[in-house]
Length: 76
Image 1 (cartoon, one colour):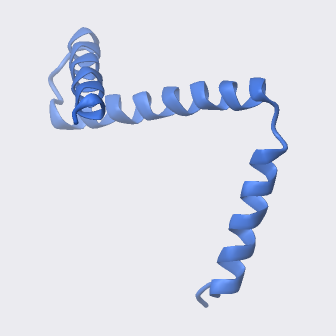
Image 2 (tube, rainbow, N blue to C red):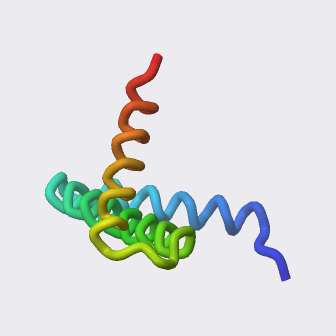
């Protein structure tokens, strides 16, 4: 059974309302947590792409990819 449009919209409204109730400190903390989770997923992807790579190289590739992402965000 697929969720209805109404259910999806109601869930989204609840999610937005919950986010609005967060303090600035909570939002900042959650942002850091999200960044950490994304970095872990990126590391897992790097390990899958380069299975023989050691952890030092994984971190180097991660930093390189983050730098590329920053440059792309700043591009006109």
